[in-house]
Image (cartoon, rainbow, N blue to C red; front, side, top):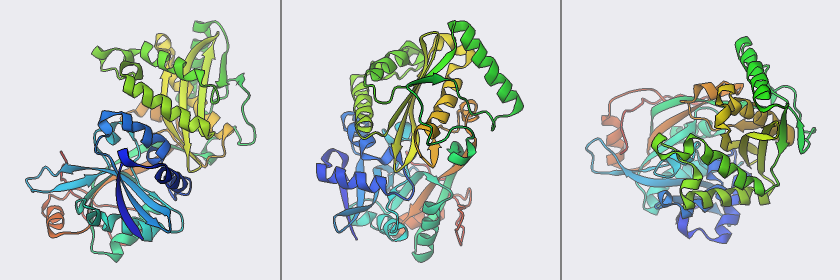
Length: 392
């Protein structure tokens, strides 16, 4: 296996094709590391310095990770490679590497152990890494087989939806271009179901018509409508901290290109909720490696008292499992959004890990830092103490 480091700005067309094949075959899909999502970010200044570390063999990409470098803020004169940074932290809700099925342990080991061979630090921060599943098990095996040290800095529980947890819609019952309302409510509490019903009735009264669902996935005109809807709400107000895409031409262009790339390959799902002919919600879902991930959504703020965002996300959830055969839907909700997270039936735990792969200084940093938590993963045969190191 061979490692190389490719600045995002220098990814070639052949690189992009190999990268896309890896994304399609990843043991743990990650839309936020899909080239159709990341390559368009080259137009955004926050993505300067973003680099892709690649494990290759025979012309195939076996693993890939997007990193930047940062200083360790504990007085040590060293830097760390991190999956965070100015672009990834605010715009990518999942950071775990793409690792090809059938090569998981070998490729993940080569990726982590080989960082220093391509000029990166021997200290790595993996943010938002799955605490369970094949990648967590592979990392536990890698640590067992090597001298690497792994410490957990933080963990969070995020919203998630497995196909079997959403009753009602089926993959073989594709939605019509416009259809009546279908909601997934069996996983909600009794009070949650009542609140959902009140919200639907309130929206119907306020708009003067029944709620309808439209599949706008193949319609490029919807992108313009989404941008207008997003900027019409609080996100269009700088004083409220709004970050509507319309406010920055580079951000708007990035959105358009991401949507176009996924639309061209049939991996874009756009759900519209209307009432009385008025658009109440537009949501964008992107598919990568067979799985679906939430990208962006917007709702009619003038009807906020009736929760069009919550109802729209519920509709979107059912549409994902109606229109695709995805095994899961990751809405990519940050743990802070507790109310929105209740829309989804399942939960998944993610951890931020700090890993010393090579070098005395990196190992010393981990051993000298105050203990915080223990890293736990299903399949881990040994646990290693946590850490409180902060990356600036």
